[in-house]
Length: 427
Image (cartoon, rainbow, N blue to C red):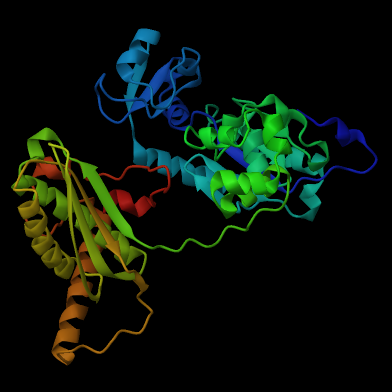
């Protein structure tokens, strides 16, 4: 959708290009498996009608199936639906290939999620004609070098927020421009909940401020949105909506490293659940070392089948080795299970906090050189185990007895807020 202002004597400018991959997980499956192309498919975490779709193909979406749709309901909507088990490692591999392809044309400034990324355009490409040409070349490159099923919608706008809004306005395979001088323009055709940042909880708060339509939202004073959001987030939203510059993304600062898992029914007895907790900790510890951090705080949380949640935590000198962390976890597990009265465990979570860089000077050991040497040896041994697992496959070597039933769950999943590194699929 080319803006009519593009033909004016002074070329319109855009600052951001936002790329949103269409039906990403499902499109990857269709690319890899030609027999699935042009068919309604849903990507699922487990093979059960009780689960929900984590992605749906374009063909499935025409039946009203989307992310979060119950598979039993989806089959009623579309009896021909094909379910495909998710392959998270494959989606991450395609993600990196797609970034490489986009960066053949222009550097990616921000990785927003597994299927979204944004480019901050430089002066030569801020001209609308140049930005449009860049967007078309990226789309063509994805089809030719990644696969014909890999399509995307691209938005061009004066800031990243509006560029994302534009990318959502035409799917699949869209290209939409929102110019600062045309605002609010086509924004008025949207519903308030179409905007990122306005969900089912925020909408009633906007209603309380007299905001129900996009026209109301656009005309609202900055102070009104400040009140609706309860702070500066409202001010930022007002500036972003009106095309103003938004804050630059800061480098990622890791505040914690952790994992959680809903345990299969056959592993919910306390002894087996404890093995699952240890496996999660070893996975987190391996990732901690790869990120070159040490941790000072371990937090353990369990939720029983009856519903209540119990937790325990400990602080210690900064460490990264699996042996020391496992010893701490053993004590925490005893504490938390005593609280839970040794009930069956439905979910377990472990998190390492108080992170500090390996480069940060270490405090002198209280017990002298022998203790320091012991810690260095444990860290070295842990890193050797990491290298073996990276080369030979996940769980080739583990600390403590880990039955095959526990090993089967330990693959990495893609979360909404974080894209796993390739290495995590072997940790």
